Amino acid sequence: MDRPLPSHVVAQPESLYVGGSAYLIATQNADGTANLSPASSYWALGSTIVLGLEVAGKTVQNLLERPELTINFPSGDLVDAVLRLDGTTGRYPVPEGKERYRYEADKFALAGLQPQASELVPVPRVAECRLQFEARTVRATPGHTGEWFMVEAEVLRVHADPRILKPGTGLPDPRRWSPLVYEFRHFFTTGEERGHLPKSQTA
Ligand SMILES: Cc1cc2nc3c(=O)[nH]c(=O)nc-3n(C[C@H](O)[C@H](O)[C@H](O)COP(=O)(O)O)c2cc1C
Image (cartoon, rainbow, N blue to C red; front, side, top):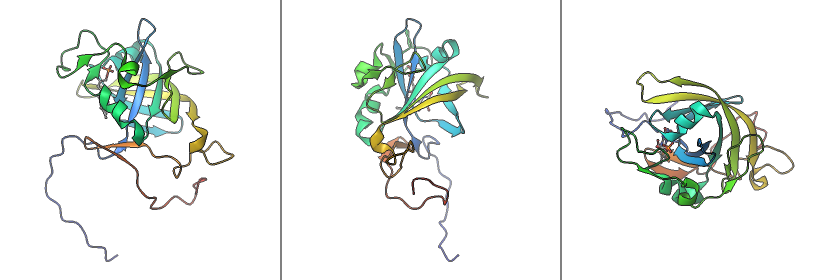
């Protein structure tokens, strides 16, 4: 190919978030109330989703004790709700390593988001999110630095607003919905389609 190649210099990004979906993860506190936290580190294969979660956070503490969770994917219109949750933790007192955080007991209220009862887990979904997963943790493995856990969860049920589905199917249609993408501490939505796999059922 005659495509001109880029030149490269050594870069120092603030984070290695090259660009992936932001999500809102809800977990259950010991008193039965819900915690809600923004996150973005994950990968998924089959019905397994693997989340990268900080050791010092309330979310992973909850998951080690009560394995159920919901993973809720905001679209671009919910960026303000995600930003309102930034810098907050459900842990009281605020633990070491989270000095820039403040404690918030009701993060749904802080974000201006509504809890919606789930069908299979005792943890609410985020009603405003058009794509929601109910899931259960099957394993949490400490990362090699001791700062985070790899949390493997089994997705039990996927909920979608019918407006983001290919009509007459249960297939989320990427032409009808875009996730909120977190890229090097900035937020975007996805742009124009550039292609698709031949096997896509929504093409
Ligand atoms: C856009 C965004 C992405 C984030 N991604 C992650 C992440 O992938 N993993 C993580 O542990 N924390 C992530 N954080 C920070 C958490 O929100 C933070 O750890 C917070 O303490 C979680 O709340 P909790 O202590 O109540 O669980 C992210 C924050 C924002 C705003």
